[in-house]
Amino acid sequence: MIHAVYPGSFDPITNGHLDIIRRATKIFSKLTVAVLVNPQKKPLLTLHERKQLIRESIQQFDANIVVDSFYGLLVDYAEKINAHAILRGLRAVSDFEFEFQLSLMNQRLNPRINTVYLMASADLTYLSSGLVKEICSLGGDIKDFVPPGAVELLNSKLATDPSQG
Ligand code: ADP
Image 1: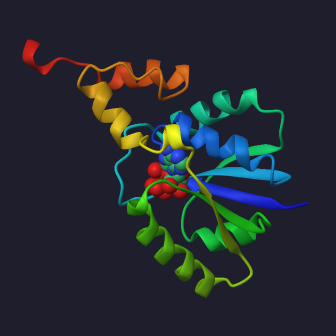
Image 2 (image 1 turned 135 degrees about the horizontal axis):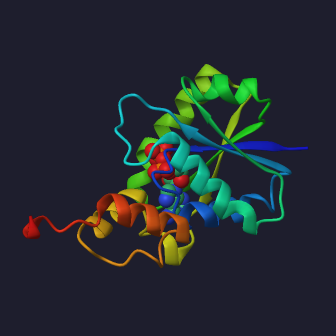
């Protein structure tokens, strides 16, 4: 059995993340989607909301997927859950430098755990959680970019019109 951990902020999970998860289930026999609790970032959604949205949206996959969260070093968490690999998605060249540095550091910290990258699908490469939140806060329609539960939640948290108030 090959177990991979897919870490991220998932604030919120997007169709880009879901595409990576769907493709990863064809490669790995077990996938742990792990929400990083990062005190330096100020997420829009609570940890509970992010995990709940992931849980709802992965129901479409008939695969061995666990949803979890972690705090601290990713390699330590990967070791703790007996994962063999770290999975990350690569969008444009802009992701590359950061991801390269991250994977080298993780390799240095724990040479047993390799990082595996899946290139973003061409039609989803423009998609990021940050951009979705920005579009939503400006009143744009985000239903093509995130699962239905996320549309509802983001609209309730973001879609206000400051010019009216
Ligand atoms: P982080 O803060 O760790 O980058 P994200 O939730 O933004 O967390 O992303 C988690 C992982 O998913 C990262 O490896 C990121 O590159 C990847 N990812 C995000 N959006 C997409 C997308 N549209 N297509 C492919 N991979 C993506």
